[in-house]
Length: 212
Image 1 (cartoon, rainbow, N blue to C red):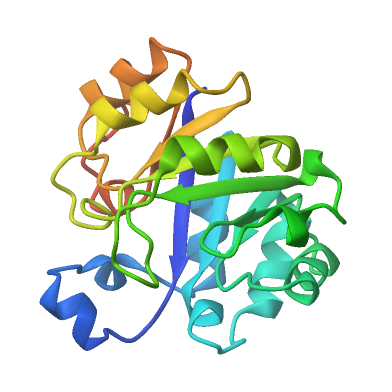
Image 2 (image 1 turned 180 degrees about the vertical axis):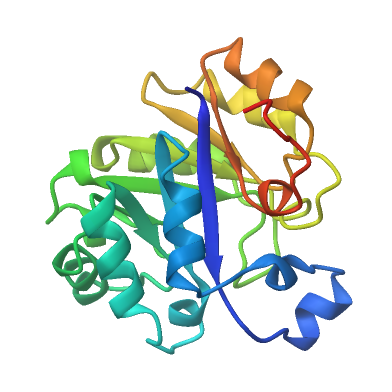
């Protein structure tokens, strides 16, 4: 399988989301039964806790329960060693670290349990990231890479396959493209090159039907 289920916990829209036309929180849920039913259909599961990203820890019990049901890769708001340790204590199979990933932070953890996400745009500065350079620096500390196209993320208008496929050539490690993937042919294009597709909102909107 080359599809990962990508799930957000987030309840309130921010002004930034509204400005960016990011309606992903409309299709998010913290209903445990709904989540559990959905994740069991997918080979691999990502949980991104956006509440934690904004400094709130509403979802720890839910995350722990889901991790007891299926191997989950968990991220969102991971900034320091204590955050990584906490997610492992909740049962995370792997921890996803994006903006704050550095060799100094990651070297104290087994690389087989770390997924490094690399944004197309640095969310702190709003400037483009040097994705190849970050991949090179962080390669020794990661089991997997995820390339996240910030410009398309959550908009359900198609993903950045061109750059996503190009960056995949820079590593031999498992690699996924994230952000706006909406159509079955996108998943097929990535699958044909041995690349995972991370899909979220389009699954909630049932755009794929039984094609996954």
